[in-house]
Image (cartoon, rainbow, N blue to C red):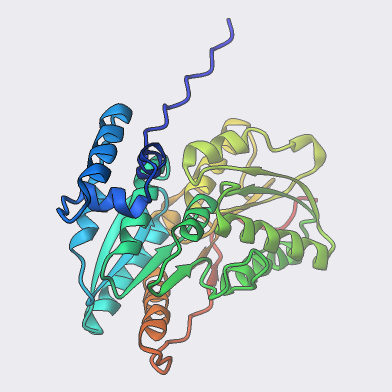
Amino acid sequence: MAERNPPRPVKLPTLYDVAESAGVSHQTVSRVVKGETNIRADLRERIESAIRELDYRPNLTARALASASKHRIAAIVYEFLEVGPNRMAKGASDGAKEAGYLLDIVSLDPRDEQGIEESLSITGQHDLAGLLVIAPSDQVMELIGRVGFTLPVYIESEASPESSDSAVSPNHRAVVGVVDYLLSLGHRRFFNVAGPDGWVSARKRVTAYAEGLEAGGGISLGTIPGNWTSESGYAAGMQIPLDQGVSAVVVGNDQMALGVLAALADRGVRVPEEMSVVGFDDIPEAQYFRPSLTTIRRDFERQGRVALERLLAEITGDASGVSELIEPELIVRGSTGPAPR
């Protein structure tokens, strides 16, 4: 008997929903939620009625941002998904302290659209010096455009100051370098396990993978998007078309690469004798995978510092203190070897 699809989560009402129902701006709704008293009585009554009718519950993280001052910077980062963004936030926090600022790190669950929407809305209304957004998804990018910030905003996306998908970053060059390395080992037929379609960084890595293959004469036998987790990497690894001669798999991050290695083991594929696998990030556990994982090492904390410095340059108008990024490094371990004959 086929399993029924689980029900989709119910979308909770947002601050914007209350504003639409009450016929007021979302800024006015936010002022009422925060307890401001200088609101016309009729507006307050309409808003409070809409809140009750929609059963709207303010997001606590967003409300906490309301206490920020001009020496505070808010950093938006997704929690629990990737090691890299959290380490970038650590580097940005250290850099902010050294510059005399306090970084408020706001961890958001990407499944909580209400929380994302409200946090961005509240952030745009309060007396912050600036906003740093780390590893954004399309959802966050769209909401940033909707809020219409008046404060300086810097979006860290694959370590590039540009936000377009076509921007060439150090990470882009690193992925192209991985493909070149595998081509030099004699691999010609590749497979790609990518990050989620809705993430800017994931799309950039897929673009770099395709460009590397085109330049070097390799062939891609497909790309499957995962969600950064080992579970999604395992599911993708079980779908690699082994009967089409794939001998190299390029994976969007190390956690998914762990899942790919497990899937290949369960399918009886020897790594690296029959299949080479490369990850991305060089998480601390990568060297303890079996076989140990060839991957791209990034200096996440420096990346976070540089992002913070670029934001401060926008805040102060002085770009003299912006550091240079360090190019990612290919770390060759046991999961790659010559293409099978």
